[in-house]
Length: 297
Image (cartoon, rainbow, N blue to C red; front, side, top):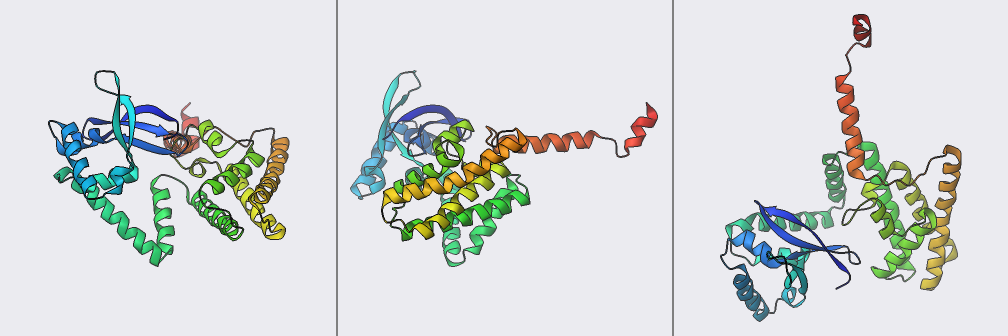
């Protein structure tokens, strides 16, 4: 496992806490399995419960258990002890094997997500509709949402182009994305997320309009340059990524020179939503007729 940092406990059910750790390289949360079992089963001995369940799953050839990691985490007595941890996908699979009434909401949720995924494969428009609904519920404006969906389309066009050029999905996509990001913003994706105080959250969901527009310009430019240059090797693709990002970098510098303000901000989605809330609350305190207050003074 890559560098993993202890993180504050989170509440999963009721008031019982789950120990967690964040893997910065993989951008994944890891959860202490015995803590989850304690919450779901009310077992007097969750360690023993997990030991028995783990053996049964191993005997069944369950790869989820084989791939589970051990990690030193702070125990109730304050000492660091090694305990089995699971990422989100592994944890949900383990939960499916726990015969507990409290696990049913998880199983129902899993079934729903699976059903939605099948529906989206058959009709991709449903995925767009669900994304639109999710963003609206999170408090984003319709204008921002349509821009975000456009950014997704532009990103997909770029990854389609990379696929044609033989770029491997995963690590190589991440390297090229960092090259684009560094060329226009001066930061890798990871550095950009840390600037905004993000961990697992999506960086683009936490961008301002201008940040998102420049990201789209950088990726659209990279796609167009790639189609013209037709890079053959990964190193050539890296150079194209830098050139595409540079286009947006020049635009950013020109705008900052005109306005005297930085485009890149530490603000994230929580800050944006709080700003909207403050504006709404301030507006609610204003008199309906501005002249009324003036007349009374």
